[in-house]
Length: 360
Image (tube, rainbow, N blue to C red; front, top):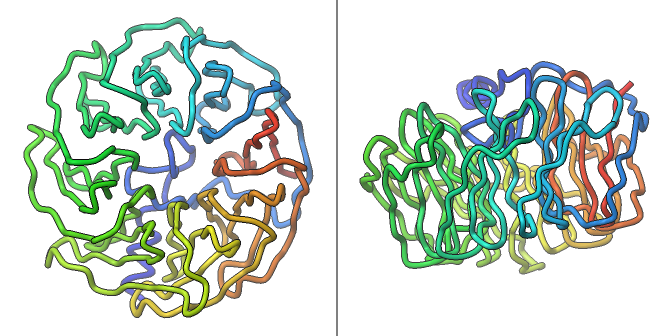
């Protein structure tokens, strides 16, 4: 167990939150820049359109896509708008990613946008076959993005030129997790796949037997993700097999939330209105926290605390060890967006068009 915890922590050393889930392994963990134990609302940004995209934070700026079709840059310190980029179509669940001064995001027309982070000017666009709900990931000179046209794309990060396209047999909703030059995707076609980023060749696939919208979280040789088959899986990426399956004994509901990995636990929300913490080694339940509605937000974790939204209109802070509620904030609208953590602050958005920043 000590080794497993160390592996979890080794994925967490990121001062900023430059992409969905904070880092390439999609662990949802921030080690530095953790928020204080006692939070207060620092600012609220109001836009009037719902947010299903999640925020990222880099260089003291919050970036997020809106239902109005805007990619927004908001000053982390003040909550003031720095710029807006018009995508031309609604931005759904695709969360931006930033690398080398470029912000990337997908829209529901299926277009991937590359935008200059300094001034919000468009650099290039790439059209896929249909809507994008996956979030982009930047690795070396490539940006990876999934599309509902059943493909995972790799594009040149500077020019948008297609490097390769990997076709599956179902929509690619999940965001790829990256480790050692390999992209891992959990698929709507009921397969977990490993794809080499250099050339787009499949390394292996494991049948999960269930439609999967959640993105995998990686720690060491293991991948963890929930499915629409009402289960959470642990997959050994070396042995190429499922190690355990977790299912609530009574409430059979899908898992849409992507997991965070902290203190040897796999923690994620369920459509059963619960936050589940599962022992990463055994697959046994560690604790459960009940909310008042489905939990589609993917949790973030820092300093022994878990941050997560619920469709009950509340933003919760839980103790990672026990699941005890430490704090909550009533937003008044469903919070399916996932939190981002940086510089002692946590930022999250709600479906009533508000972005919230909490800190000291």
